[in-house]
Amino acid sequence: MNSPERLQHRVSARMADIDPFHVVVLVTRAKALEAQGRSIVNMVIGEPDAPVAPVIAEAGIRAIQTGQVRYTPGLGTTALRESIADWYRVRYGVELPASRIGVMPGSSGALLMTMGVLIDPGDEVLMADPSYPCNRHFVRTMDGRAVCIPVGADTGYQLTAELVERHWSPRTRAVMLATPSNPTGTLIGFDELRAIHAVTTRHGGVLIVDEIYHGLTYGQPDRTALEFTDDVFIINSFSKYFGMTGWRLGWMVMPQAYVPDVEKLAQNLFISASDIAQQAAIAAFSAEAVAVHEARREAFREQRDFLLPRLQGLGFDIPIEPEGAFYIYANCSRLTNDSYAFCLDILETAGVAIAPGLDFGSHRAAEHVRFSYPKPIPVLAEGIERLRHYLNR
Ligand SMILES: Cc1ncc(COP(=O)(O)O)c(C=O)c1O
Image: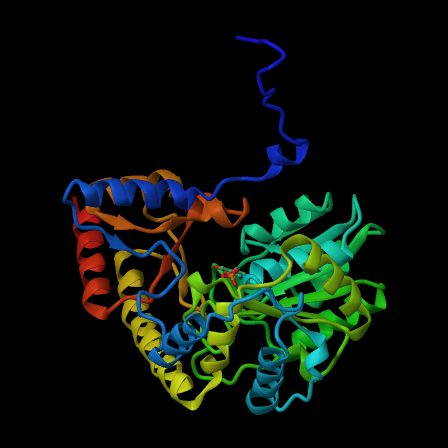
């Protein structure tokens, strides 16, 4: 029926450029298989299974019980912003005024605000391919253009100052990095980070560094770009190290001059982040919670050390040991020439869920898969056994 009373289905042109997560197809199928009674080893989702640290949960419950759960200021409560500033002082030795911190609904909110205040239509943002898929969509949502630069093992799957220089154009507005990276777990060396910042600012651009996997590095301390500059956008979150994915809380540190605009945009787009989550998150910095998080970091390292050599033994090529996050980005070209079909078949046949390279970009995507490893070692061992059986058929 095509009467004028019917809603016309017409979406904005930008929606054609927003790709779905292919992992969602896999997750949905994995759930359907589980509902049929199949056991699935799930190494697809980027979050640990462990419950939130009890002291955080208790603070959240207390917040609800006070009955005082309200809108907060657009950039978050003073108490939480000050706790975050303290964290930078203790953890990194960086002095930061709490006024430069904006508390957001997840680092996703922080990324959206950052793009919102920086990007005009047609502006370009340089980023690595592979990288976190939502980044190019944040840029597209602001009618900017994500320039995804192919990277490989030779640069640790990261941008370098030389690559930034080579891809700079008159339309380039910003450079987006993530260290440690999703999907590769690799870091950017501190000197390289400084060099990328120097090239970016020399060209009049802005550097955005996603530090959401800070706290989850193995064998070396985290270094933040805030150690050498105030002129940078830092993105961070309570989701990963602090284990609070579902609480939807993150933050950004911005140059002082951008604070009023970010505040204005945040107030308009979501008023404030969740007050319950903000009240609870103060406890995430307590010694008790940090002890839980540090023990988890140690467990993740053991899980990585368990999985990595076993995947190599099965024929996956992993040229660089991932030093952070909880992902292993593996080349599977000795096993398949279509990693998406491979992931679908492994799920159906072996009952193991992993993510295809396609979700993280297009550069050699069909040759790669991502394993998310924050799982108990017996679960990882079962995954390896199933894969061995599958590959030896
Ligand atoms: C690199 C990176 N940045 C940002 C996010 C968004 O996380 P959140 O919105 O939960 O803070 C993720 C989530 O997986 C990520 O991997």
